[in-house]
Image 1 (tube, rainbow, N blue to C red):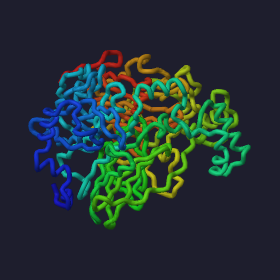
Image 2: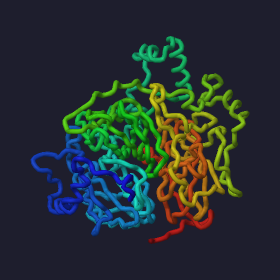
Image 3: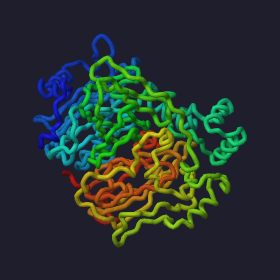
Image 4: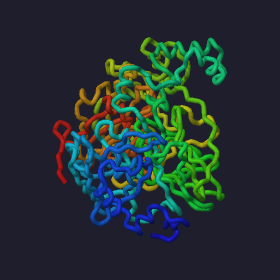
Length: 619
């Protein structure tokens, strides 16, 4: 590794160096084996006290899953812990080596671990019912797979709603070649959300009462507040509300679950616990940020410090300097910041709906703190978020359709018709159509269609962002540092609608829940394009297991980024190209846990021909 690229050791010993020099991984395994299940000393342990393990070290590692009472934000909560903590330990791996991980299930129920974003044999992917049966109570399952990539990733349960109970952690894979990112010290930043309610009761509330956790809805009591915030008259505000009611929508439906029940965590710590990350003036600090939440999008900034984004979903990108970024559930971003002086800076992660925040402090020593930013006003969805790109609400029928804008869209030069599966010659890879007409909804009661057109929104930072004068990262800024190997134009494409009915809390693809849907068939060796069309009023982070998605971000074959999770915003048309090179069956789903549980999930079968069954490769 070139000297100018090698991370220089920090002044103080980090957790990683401590583990490397003391053998603490072996000690942690010994303690987990000898400590009685549930034992926590004189009282419950604190959440957020996690260590690090190296899964590619000789002999591998052991993970122990069990129920424990932990203090989360100072309150006792029943958690699923991994080696005694939430989050679980940071797991490191070395690219080119073999990972060996023994998972011991001490729970009274079956469990699993999915290695999010990792390319591996499908039998090691950890999705019960698709890639393996799960890990029964009292059993041990051994994960063993070659490590074929590097970067920042994470792991979590794929069983029921266990992820909501703390069953997650970060993965860091060291590159085999010199790291193009230069830094002096690094820190893991693991964002999540926690509820003291039983997760299945949360889901029951969502299904039985629409907007149960949305306490920010417009009411007569807050009409003055909205008039002041928007500068509208009473009549204008009332007219807008009536229009939204006709569409059976609510402009504050930004998040299903809010701070009404959630405690927002950074490395397992609530905001008032304020974890500290040590760095000195002049040091280049790499922050490896993972959003391990079940439902929460975060807007991240460090007031007074610009962030250089160097990696997205574990993949190196051309560095982009920004002031703020929105990280969806399951995404990862690596950023580098340089402290100009020896004072504290606040790492601020504000929820997308502004119902709460997580925070930490970047400082040269413990005990320091910086001021918190002023809270921002909750965002409201606009007509643009609903696909009404030109504003106005005239001509809208009882289902929220807009005939005027339908006609305008049909005359747009970039307009394309909705397409079935198609194959043939190579498809274009640049200057893709900007807008898509998807016509009248044919997805039944499982879908409330927002508009008849969907547009690319690659430059849109998201609801509630972009009006502060700060630079905000968007997908249009992401460019691969180097052209990924094997990238070529696709020869087949199909459209996939993201659908939902908030009133019934039904979520799915093309109006069908997983239980009602057929397999999605990908042909082995093909290059495939999926055009995702969001018919709902919410953003959905969509994750494909086992294969990369090459995101069309306005670039070309050379520099469009690779991602394992893509956010599809309301009324958005978003395209991804996939090299189908992984035999087996794979999960494809929205990573909002309660949406996935309510049906927004499909099984992908990699087949030899589009009429055949999946290729099962046991390797």
